[in-house]
Length: 387
Ligand SMILES: Cc1ncc(COP(=O)(O)O)c(C=O)c1O
Image 1 (spheres, protein in one colour):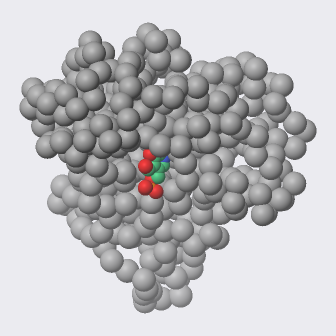
Image 2 (spheres, protein in one colour):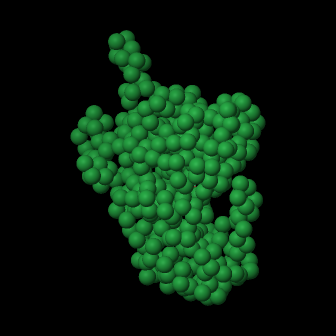
Image 3 (tube, protein in one colour):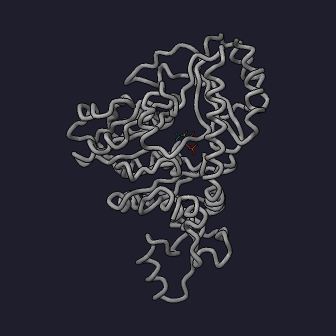
């Protein structure tokens, strides 16, 4: 079955949908049992998509997590109230006091903060590595290294990692490989084909796709699923059935949305590249993006998120540029149907393995589903302020 066919029907079991196309939103804390036999059956099967207790899920979350496994290719998917909870939940499942973590230098800022502010206090040491390190990762591995964490492309600066090489080396010493696959979103990057053990997503972004719900997912391979599932339960993590419904509904149209995001983003990125106010465009499909060869080798396509560096411009003119945009509003999340803009701050202190040398302002764009000519016209008039 081709991917587009699969995501239309993934997770649609009659026992969960009662015959309708979508599963009902099944809200529950308590599940009641008529007989001791029924209750015992639920206890034995509670980790296996059987109604037991609300925190363990209901038909709505069962359908969504099964669909995520079909999309990404894992054997089980734990659900979390947001992407950050999925990241921290996955890390806490495979790290304990005295362990060492290898974290990509271009990680999402709160992931980095979690390592520095929470893991340190738990006696877990983090080393940040250059996203382009490739086989050189071997030199950073210590006897107590337990997890290698990847995010590809990197947050804001878009470096694409050599995931198969990194995974192969990590597995030589039984290190668990966790990937933040939010950008690849399961449709454009198939984590388990490239050696990843656990794929984490902020489903808040492209899976939900409409900027109206928060959700996190961690999908695991066979070896890692039992530990991830157990720890996720022990940490008390679960997701609301209403949000699972929204995420599943978003998932159904992920593929068509993604194609449009990708096409429009490439049109805008190419236009920006030729603009005199723009110094460079940070887009994984462009040859000058570090790791673009891995993007071409491993990804099925792109999406609407990329960044660019201005040719100059003081704070006042950059602010004027941002304030002048009509279709691009400023906002932190991405992956919805709307276009967004954000000035990326703090790269000088957010990169420690390989300092960020660029001094000019960096702007991140999310290209939404508006007409691309309107978006280009909008950028064109706003860039006048920094030309
Ligand atoms: C790459 C990446 N991972 C994780 C997250 C966190 O997702 P959430 O906002 O759902 O916690 C984000 C949010 O911006 C992100 O960009």
